[in-house]
Length: 293
Image 1: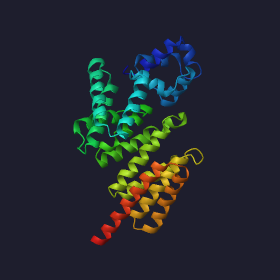
Image 2: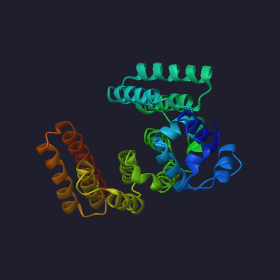
Image 3: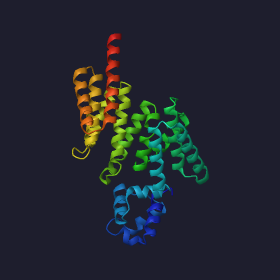
C-alpha cells in the first residue's frame, strides 16, 4: 500500500467504521475521503488521532502500510541477534539466502532489507568492507521516509555500522528528528537511545569528539532519569571515554570505572568485562599516542 490514506481506509473498513464515524470531531468527511483516495496528505497529529479512534498503534499502521508481518520482524531480529552474538557466519548466510528467496517470491521490501542486514553482519564479522550497493539501498529507503517508526529505527540500528561516518551522522540525526513525534507512543524509544549510543561510540572511535559529544548530549536529553537506568550507566561510561580522549585521563578513567563497578554490582559480569576491556584499549592507545608525540 503506497499511500497512507489507502492503508487507513483498509483498516477502517476492516473494523467496520464508517467515514463519518471516524472523521467526527477530527476532520471533515470530505477531507478524510480525499485522503483515503490519495488525493491529499494529512498532518501526523491528525493521523495519530484517527488511529487512536480505531485503537490502532502507529506500529500496527506501518506494518499494514508496508505489508509487514509482526512475526517476520520479531523472528528475524531474534535470529540475527543470536547468530551475531555467536559469530555464526554460516547461519547468518543461511538467513540472508532465505530472506533473499522470500523477497524474490513475494516482492516485499522488508525481506530485501532483512537479507541486506544479514549480509552486512557477515561482512562485518568477516572483517570485510560493507558492500556499497547494499548500503545505498538502505540509505535511500531511510532517507525517503517522512516519519521513522519502530521498523526504521530497528533496521538502521542493525546497519548503522556499515555507513561511512559522515553519512551515519546524517542518518542518526534523521532518526532522532524524524521520530520525535513518535516519542509519546513509548515503543521505539529504546531503539532511538541505542542509535545515539552506537553513533557516539563510532564517533569516539574515529576521534570525532565534538560530534560525539553532541550525540551524548542528545542521549542525555532523551533519557528518563527513573526508567532508563542501564542507559544512564552506558552514558556515564561513554562520557568517561570522551573525557579520556579530551586529554583528561584520570577524570575520565574514574567515570568509566564507576560505570563498570555499577555493572559489576548489578551482576552484569559480561557487560562489565566487555566495558573494562574496551576501557583498557582506550587507555593503552592514549599512552601510545603520548609516547609518539
